[in-house]
Image (tube, rainbow, N blue to C red; front, side, top):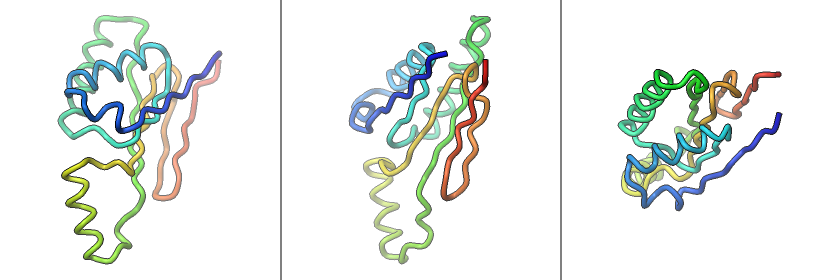
Length: 125
């Protein structure tokens, strides 16, 4: 079995509309790629991604869904002034220091995370 990890920089998804972001993600997942995406989708985009995933599962016996996890460096230890500035910057330009992992459920068994690490558990064949 061939495993492909594909990194998507924030600059590649930033100019896309929500619909195009979701379409791009699902097309790569359909190619059995595990995506490592800089930044994260907005909450409504994540909801739309899940909704579209459910639609695809209903139409295809091969497509089993997705696994998604967001890993963010812990910022609660920052001084309050820096934390507030960082929060405002995140709202304006997005959370570029966040890593989102999205993979096909047919390959990814589970994504475990805690504040210091993320583990990607794959299904064996």
